[in-house]
Length: 138
Image (tube, rainbow, N blue to C red; front, side, top):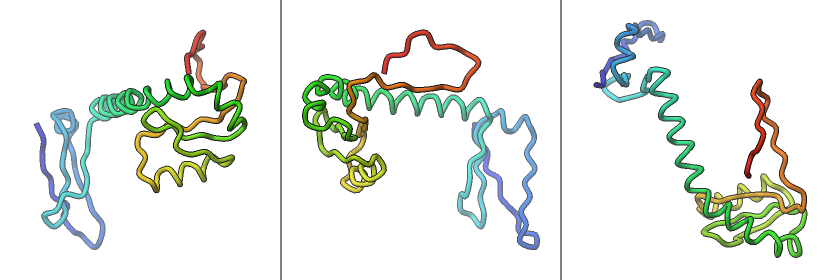
């Protein structure tokens, strides 16, 4: 169940009092002058939504990631050391500079696009954590 609250102007400073029980009952929509300006979620709701969003993004990227692995032998011959953009299972762009490539692919509307550096060595990803990952498939 959602709640709507209104910010009241008081010398250009805003105050909003929220009871813990209110935050746990669902999203709180904050309005200013009749327009929604923010949504307050419980930490649990935020984490659930964030996790679900991340999983959806990974699911959408998987076909392009698989295509990168499939194309890798040829990419090593043609684009070794460069970053490549894979979209809808095919190579759409490449550049030695990752940021330049990201900007260019976004300006063309490619989403979701998988960008990876072409190297013969396996990609190493470090996760600062107390936990150990014994096997990670990238």
